Image 1: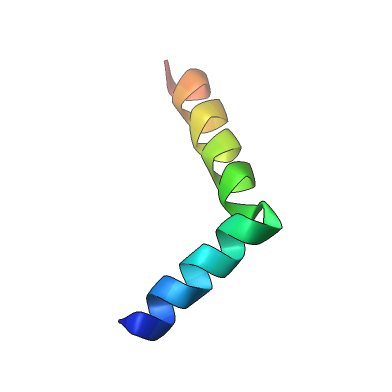
Image 2 (image 1 turned 90 degrees about the vertical axis):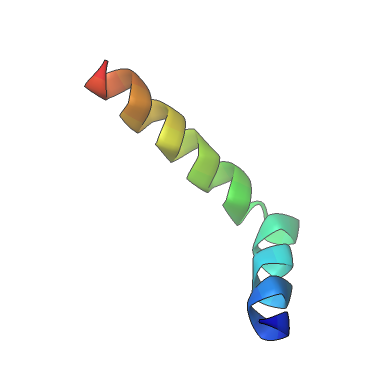
Length: 32
């Protein structure tokens, strides 16, 4: 689990997490 957490934090540092949130918001808007 520690490795997964490190990967997640690494993704956040790279801005990948923000991109993922943007895609989630776009999908939510499209479905509505």
